Image (cartoon, rainbow, N blue to C red; front, side, top):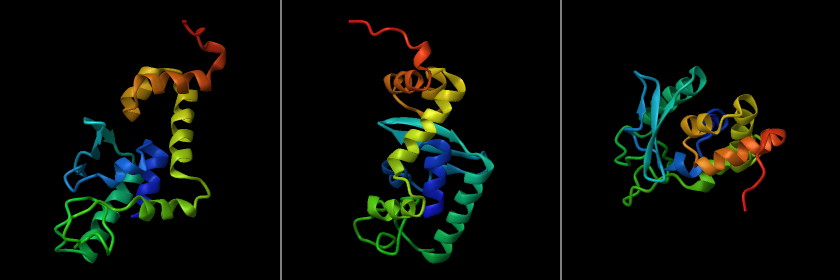
Length: 154
């Protein structure tokens, strides 16, 4: 579970809070996609080979560990798999996986978006790729390319 969470943040810049809310119907392994609800908007993530493999491995492990779990969330723990309230996995459970990386989930997310902004300099690309707000995309492009930033309008 931890490796999948780190992979989704590092490669696809999905926030940990959004990862925790993923449902079992979010992945489509046949089409290598993952549907993420971002602020009420559905965003399709096209999985690369690594995250596709991590997702496949997690689904197998989830099935092996908790075959009868009624919890509709993709990520579960021993505590949440059969909890009567069917909660999503806790932030702390996911955060623990990032302790091994030496970087917080927020820093990893930010680094991924900034890296893509350096590569493309196109805020529309960032909006489509990561589902970020247009204002956020523009700020990341300006941070990556301060020489191309237009002066602020007052």
